[in-house]
Length: 48
Length: 487
Image (cartoon, rainbow over all chains, first blue to last red; front, top):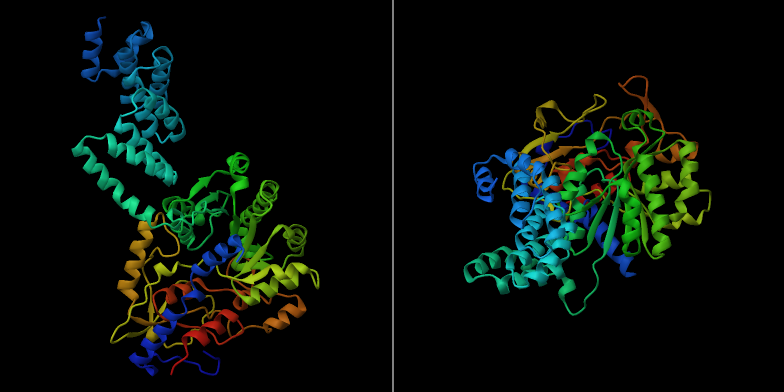
């Protein structure tokens, strides 16, 4: 959202586009999950 | 009074009279010690019951009934260390008693001493009668499956890793269970915390962490300091945010100070232990006094983690001297997040065209017509809860009630009223403070640039597309690039 676009219209997006965005979320879980931190801890302990 | 009369009193549930009788007459036989102890036990006087049995054992060290009752009571009272001691004695006397092996296996499993538990369970099965053996096999089978699948059972054996979490973590503390699932031991050092976060210790214990009271810290470090692989602290820091500091006191300082001390002590026992200090997005570094405090202590850290790049830069600018080598320890890594196994993105043919809102909206600007807004009314446990079952129920409930909503509204409260860009804030060493509705305190708007909003994480967890400001917050930028890309 930008300041110039004052109101967001949820009907401006089709079901297909929403599904596509959900797939994007599903495809980038590393951005918002604990798992990368676990992998990081493993790597610093094993020296990798 | 004859033995038979005392027995009769006991059978009739007249426990007080049994105890009174033995307070005037000496206890002579193993049966009498057992009767006295079981009378105490029946009245809920567990300590007295244990003492009576221990006295009996000092006179009749090989008495099977006294030993059995003592072990049962210790086990029931979760006095595992002592129970183990008497189990060892009992197994010398009755090396083929499956009950003792079963109790031992259960205790060891609770302590996650899986190798030893497996060995005890095998003995329980070996010596149990056939019908009992089947029941025991069922009881252990689930645990064995899990155990067999662990990498440490493979030929590439490695000792279990040990991680110590100092403090409770604030959001998604139960995500630390991933370490346990992967065969690590998770220890949590309990430090004072704000009342809302107290439940985090309960949920951590519920998912299998071993909680260590602060007064036991020294003993713990003496016993396990050399075994620790990672020491981590994660959470907020309110240096310069008096609005929050007033609510939470100095619990953040106390926690980080404990972390620094624990690392120093552990390093003496194991120089290789890794010290990880993580800050969530609720962190502020605008008080020079606390920044000096950090500067003098921060070198014990191997890694310093931040939710966003902006937060990391805010810290580097305020805390480190220019050109400090400590900057190389800084990483953007989010700790207080859900496990990927708790992410529940579902797909629908048609989505409900509503924009979900949760919690507070500080200023009045909402960039969406009220016709499209759906306010979440329920309190659903997602990031925190009394135990993991409650959270699991919360996850299911949210998915059921709101999983089909297309969008969720992120923070907008200060978006259009910021006085400076993020780089200007850093350059001028100010926080762009706004008045709040709480007393006379101000709120540092730098937060909008540095924070990862918890509600946005919840939306992402369920696949709701977050409506977020197109601003300088690098987490927002990352999401815009990641989610809003369409073919």
